[in-house]
Each structure stands twice: as structure tokens, then as C-alpha cells.
Length: 147
Image 1 (cartoon, rainbow, N blue to C red):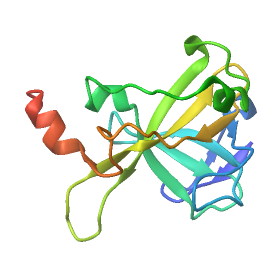
Image 2: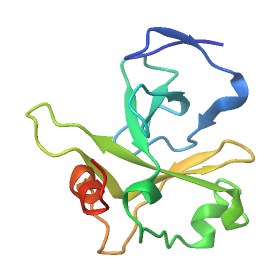
Image 3: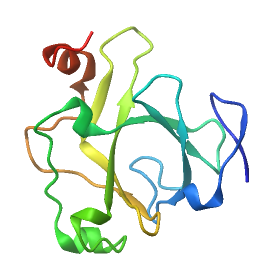
């Protein structure tokens, strides 16, 4: 399938790689279909809307940037996308790159959870006060010894 993207032009996406958000994302409830695409800046990826070419989110695996990151989401919530075990889950955090040159941050309080078996996805809100919507990625990586 051909997909028009915000930053990569038109790309081919295997239909088996499309993720579906039955309820959309917070603030973007009208958009339900996304593709995960490679990004030139590793370890980041793009989560590109299939309905709106101008809508794409930079995402990252939160476990790469926060060693102690953990999700505590109730089974009833996860059942909405048919997750039965922790092994069914892929997790991403949405990244913000401020235009004003401020810190690059990740939303660890509202991760994207994907069922890797059926590509159904949802954004959940964690109640754990350790995780914020503005987790400083650069600061965290520097504290881990990354350059």
C-alpha cells in the first residue's frame, strides 16, 4: 500500500504493518490507522497516520531511555485490544521535539500499547507519578553514559 507521509514522501507499507487505534489517540480521536516507519535518527521511528499525511508522531521504545520504566495497566483496559499476556505487547512513547530548541522529551505517562498479534493499539494513561509527559530524553541518555 502506498502511504503519503509527513517527512518521507510517499512510501510502500505492507498492510500487515498497519496498526489500528479503535479509539484514536488522545487529542486525535478521529485518526485510527497508522503505520510504523523507519526514521533516519535511530532509535526513533515514525508513527504515520494513514488518514492524514501531515499527521505523524516521532516515537521511541521507552525501555531504551528509562531503565526502570514499567507499565501498570489493568487487564480490563488491555482486553479492549485483546491483550492476554505481557508477551503480546509492544510499547512506544511519543516524542516531542520543541521548535524553540527546548529539551527533547518523551511522554512516558501516556504510552502507546500495541498488541503485536493483531496490530490493535491504544494509548493508555499511567497513574504512576514517576512517569511524566515531559521525560527529558537527552538528559536520561547522558546519565546512562551515551554521547
